[in-house]
Length: 355
Ligand code: AMP
Image (cartoon, helix red, strand yellow):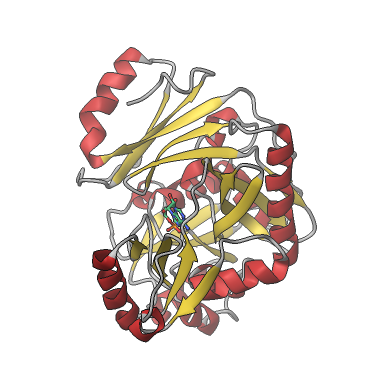
């Protein structure tokens, strides 16, 4: 009997790469599917070069693997369903459908009984006629948005006009703008029988892109416990396999869920060095249905993202902070705002340390 499995990862970016590394440490073989031959996961796995929705390529991947997983939620669910008889997909496609469509996601979260910002569905600009400016709201496309793309904060006539253009292009949700004190996220991993939860993470964004994660989040124990309970509730309802990230807004003593991502998340990278098991380790254990460890945080930690424009600053940072753990994902071109790598530091001086 072999304990070694072949794991197929759809998406070969940095998340796929770090998932693959966690799998390889456990003796598994990894094959990745990505449209780019030179993708980050290509450094550590064989790559099938194809589009994510290419059913024939997905079939080949499924035939060669015992278990399939994905590194991001915008994988075509129908294409995956079409190959479901070839390999196990423990996470299923329902979770994909929920997390890739904000309308389905909000309906799901409301049904689970966790609070979300007040919202309504908008299917065309007609739904925005007689718009009142009583509350600031944000219009978000139901599908395809990320890092603030596909969003308009409606504050005045000009932004309302932009929102109307967006609403005529695609289905959207219109939600109240939340004057949050803090953005947090909770990572939870499951094997369908039990869950393991990571400490609450505090996330600081710059231009809608995650810039810094601080762990543990600087909130009260009560609030942290509330966030963890919300995460558990969602994961339990999903009978979760693998790692799920739940992003939340904290305003006073209120916590609202913003969105969920059915995979390891940028805000959990610190767990590689700061925890006894990383979010990638527990993802691999979870999708294989193996027993999950309790998570311990060794020390307060912070993670800084390195974007394309930060490459020089990162090199300088490493000479100043040799105890920082540097990760580069092996991307050839350092484009503006492209996530090139990150650093993790085990430190309590979370405010002082910046790139
Ligand atoms: P999202 O794509 O929903 O994760 O949004 C990207 C970022 O936009 C979030 O991390 C927040 O910083 C901000 N944002 C999204 N929705 C809201 C909201 N309803 N109120 C305030 N800020 C928001």
